[in-house]
Length: 329
Image (cartoon, rainbow, N blue to C red; front, side, top):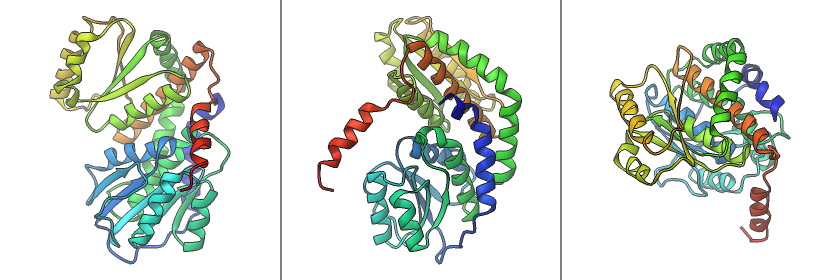
């Protein structure tokens, strides 16, 4: 996993090379809405992409993490099915619904049943190499999703320019990122971490929570500002030193949200002395997101070492899948 995290910027560059040599076909009907369906490490790219694209998109984008699809899906809906293995049962079930509704379908995968269906049906498909943990392949799915939104002309994006700039940023900052990640990991060790981000960046917080879950074998959760001000903030009355609060911040965040964070930090610090923050770098929302994602991946790696756990082990998920396999679909 360490090597996969270290190669994050290279994965971004490789994704662009795949995009450059892939020929996609235009849809038969105009796109009026989008559903991105996928779960876990395969699905988090959809959450992050939808938030980044929302201010730029001409149609609504919904992220789906279930077997079913919303009733509005029809021939004018673009359904993007994301499954790294190509065999995620929820995603394949949602794909069946999308096909029955005659939606425009695009796929992101490394193979499996999803790739087989895409090839047989002639669906647009962007692929990557298989055999790695899905969570380690986010750079590919994220770049592919951005490009699909650009290709279908539903969001004003320049994927090649943005991804190249982000990769260059990460390469320049790699040493600083690892240093900061190690410092944060040392402070988060042994804590249950609450990860906070302003509206529009909750997907980045979700990604870090997932990485702490899978890589570091730690419980954590995420919440959005200002929403958490109306509920979770009161929950901190039952807080203690076993919890840590980590704020993911951008200098471009809405000023009222920035003011809220400063007040929230003061309230939470009455219950725990582990109140941390990390600031993104980059000149665009895409660059800022990828910077924080990469930093978070390193945090989870260093915590896995400190916790003495096997970063690759996901036996709980494997057990769930093996039990589900005994039940007819």
